[in-house]
Length: 481
Image (cartoon, rainbow, N blue to C red; front, top):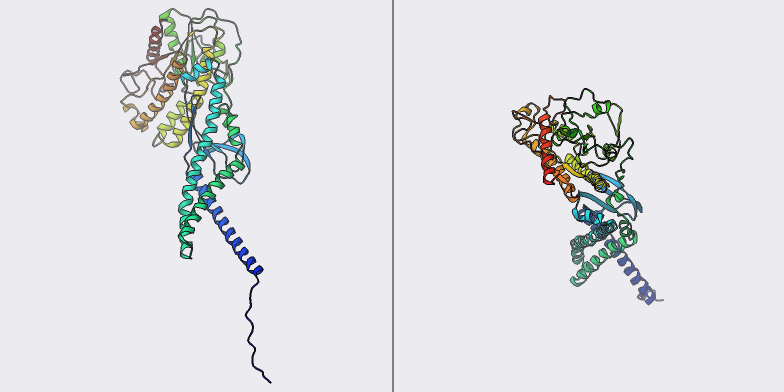
């Protein structure tokens, strides 16, 4: 009997089994490719969002930069306004994990804007701003998409190089990189279209930057309360500089006049004597446009000073209105004190803070100028700039460690405020007065500025008030008044 081992027959796979195995390998390979492409796309988009430059937007005298926030886990929420290191949420809500990011950079009063508004072109200005915001957002994502594709190329090329060592041909490696870049662009564009397609429409609904960031508008002036004053030829409105703060008060001064720091040595009285006018001085210490000129002002002693512009309208036919305002709006006193007490004055935080205050003041100043320009009495308007209180010598401030570098920062900021005052006045056709204290600054032999030991440091002395009155006279003479 033959017990020899039988040779087994070779096992053969059926065509169906081979087809299934091939399909599984293709599916696994496809899934791996998709996962790799998605990871590369996510990394490239994240990097692009981190470095893509924000796009400048200019409309209606406002300059901003538009970009996008980093991705969020929520599918709907506000955008953000970047302001000295803080993210302030926007008023509108945006769909998608990526939302608009705004940086407000500059606000000016452009003469073209004023002319457009005066010719009832406000709708065009609002439309221009909304279109610019939407266009800035769209430009940003075109650039972001290009940057994302640029990041994807070296990443994919590196992965293709590794795959080439494992046997991938050069042609397939190039094809894999090309497909990957297309995938990154597709994911980026598709993601924006799916999750943030409504953002441009939302931005187009924004009429002003205030609408976008939720800033409350400056209120209209309070209605006048009191009797008409027909005999007034000139009115002075403004802050402590115009009030004459730190100078002697009149013996018969009212409690409101004392609380506001008004003095008979203020330049309003000098203008009255020179021109034989009856001048009404409504200026008040610490007055801002919003709280003092357009709205009531609550004083330190609890009194409430009426809105200065409302009081102005009680004077039926004044020839001249003189405006001295801005220092308290930009918190000049606080800025000065911080500068004196700090090692440097040009730090980024205080600079950004001042820029923000100056922007707020510009909007309020525009509101004030509009009210004055549309008043039916049509008086001449003179806007006073601020004087340089420091000059070249700071010897009297050595004990306070106040240096020329610090003074330069403060004078530069004062120059920015004066530029806004001048641009606004000229845009509305008003006059500008530029007081000249040269040779009579704080540390000179005959200063026109009150010193650190005086009742109101850096405010004009009686002589300084006369210098301001002279500047106003020169501005009025230029206008043949």
